[in-house]
Length: 335
Ligand code: DC
Image (cartoon, rainbow, N blue to C red; front, side, top):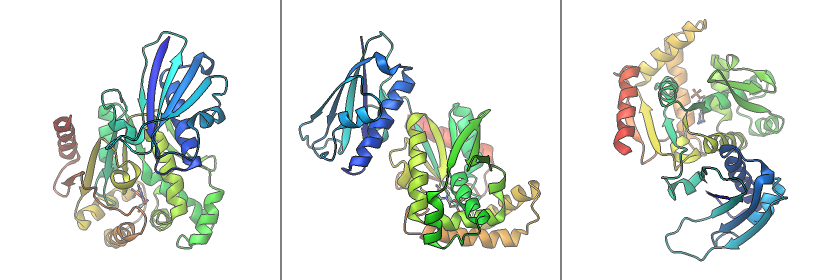
């Protein structure tokens, strides 16, 4: 017999959130322990006293764990304890070396047991985030999630369907029919929009502008953030974006915020685009970058902002290697 522990948190006491969190937690435990569902003898859940909307055991049954004996109990109200937390103990027939799974804010409960860690790299366009995040992920042998690519795919859909990316109602409507998957082939992220690999098509200037415009809407962000949290909850990864440290993963283990002057950023973007065959002018790109900075920083929901606990690095005068070394050193210092 093996006992496996797990815990997760929800943002608010809501039936749907409880269902999703329990499903994600149990699927994480099953996947990381390579379990077959029928070898789980029983599951005991406990939830903090601020959770009333649903029984975690019922959510487990609905998530396909109905053949296991299930039980939920409420924990005493402990001052200073983690809020809105669901814990589980799984009893498994086989003797295995258990991997305990702590997700979302529950990661802070057992840093020693939680082998998943997330590195958040935020910053404006051209600050070097994506090159850095990719190199860092490679050197740590973990996944790189380019969250900008996901917003770019939404922007591409708007462009293709001739939807005004500033028209919230139209974009919201478009999101209902959007199918977006992030896949990894040979370690490289592929962005799949409506079944088609659009990893290259999302890089052009028109899509870039549309991505920034559609990303200010709640309907877009909610869908993207849910997917990002799901991916980051299952494995260690480096995520780059605008709101990773402040909103997507406020509990990320390491947070960095990269900056550079608009001129340097425009020059980098310009070279990158020219290398891809786009005929662009650096002045035009600088104007576009300044406009995007303003739009990404001033939107109401999860704007581009440095998290209070993020390490800020001005990359204007640094090479990628120097930034990478600085980030690795900061990570070492924190460990
Ligand atoms: O990082 P990028 O240039 O590929 O991002 C494209 C746009 O997507 C950016 O202008 C704003 C939006 N975005 C966002 O709002 N939040 C993120 N986490 C990542 C990107």
